[in-house]
Image (cartoon, rainbow, N blue to C red; front, side):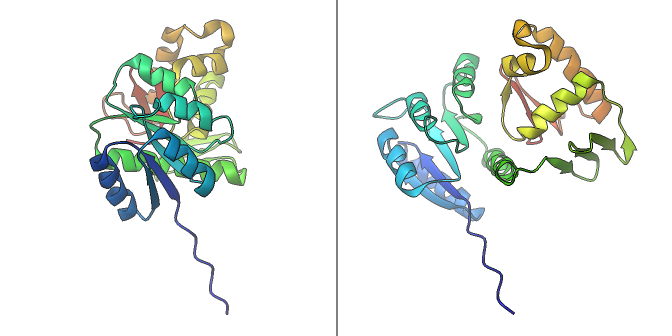
Length: 235
């Protein structure tokens, strides 16, 4: 009987000018089984991505030759590879700019290793779902979501969701691990004239959390990035 071909490890490209950060990420990512390549500048990172490819990019905003935002804008012209932006800049405006320009997530330095690794895993999982063309199914023993069957259960009991509650849950699950900005959510669920009606979203999130047995103080499923947006399922 022929051996089953080994699945190659996911490839992560780290673009950061700080040697210590690159070394730290290299060790952390390799410990999780990923193949890692590094670049110390935006230009080198784009060249590596073009020549070698990657399944995920960790991109610093403050680079010596060009802004990380400019690197993101250039690679988004020809690649949809998931991108996690790193920065010491913690302002809401900076996060929103990165996410609106095509970043999948934004992590502020200093960051916890476990949090970053969880976000990497979530983006690689969602990438796999997208590439296989499958409708996401979530199951953790407490919460079950099957979008194809429109089936949501908590501890085996069916949960009755309104149309907008289900639309929000489906939008977040399809983007599991990624931050979906408030304007994106509002436009998707209420339409383009409601992109600034954040009070609608606060009420809807509160109702959905209650039905899923989630909590804003100790979130398990719906995580808020204050002033930016929401993401599903990664602590």
